[in-house]
Length: 298
Image (cartoon, rainbow, N blue to C red; front, side, top):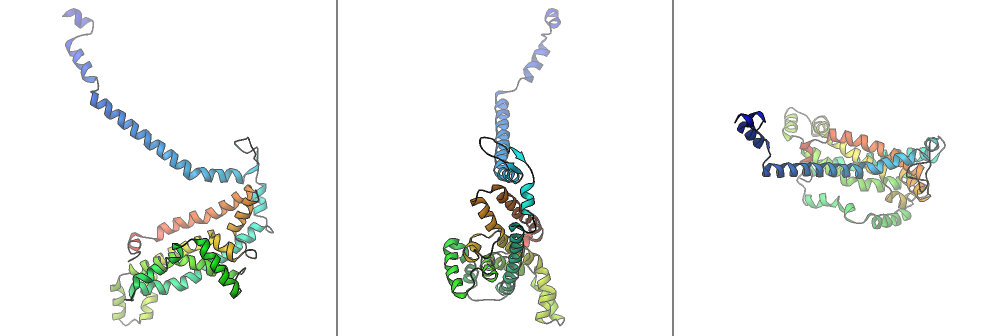
């Protein structure tokens, strides 16, 4: 007894050592927990690579002076192509001004249609209301190339091909899908009791609309305007069939640069198009609330 205690093999020590050994079930649980964590990490890494990999490639191409096979990274770096893009007399700046101008005009045309249409769809008991809502989705139900080819034929007969108004009309028709549905949801989210209260104290229907209804629906309408602006800024197919060659926007410049093998100019143009999209999506997240989103399609 004394010898076993001196050697450190007392019954108490053996019991404690056995109690510290993990049970078979506990070992399997730890293994599956580790495996699950590893799969999550690998999944997040793959998602990050798919999301940020193309963006990193754009950034590398935008600062690459020389980059050719078999090198995995640019041979020389520099900002020379950025200077070319932002040169006051360059095609990029004129295309940027044209794109922004067309996008702003497209927003005005889309709002001129979507605000009264959205209010009517949200407040009035219209026959075939659901069919009217679906009607605004028709441009998305068919291949865009087939639609724009026929639109270009019609616009050619009207003398609108190769003009800013023709491109604006094409962009506005595409943007109505978003603006009408979001505007209708924004007006539907406005409490009717507030409108009735304004009418009861003597406000006219027009004054009630401009002082009560429209300000409360303004965040949703602003979000729809931003959607239309971004769609117009990134629109390529409609501009290609209706505007070329007289009207050149940034997406067309991006296409011409990439087809010509000038990947530096194409990458810089893509990054320029990316900046307003990210900024405006942050603004949209602030404007579009849950009560507005819940009314979409109702």
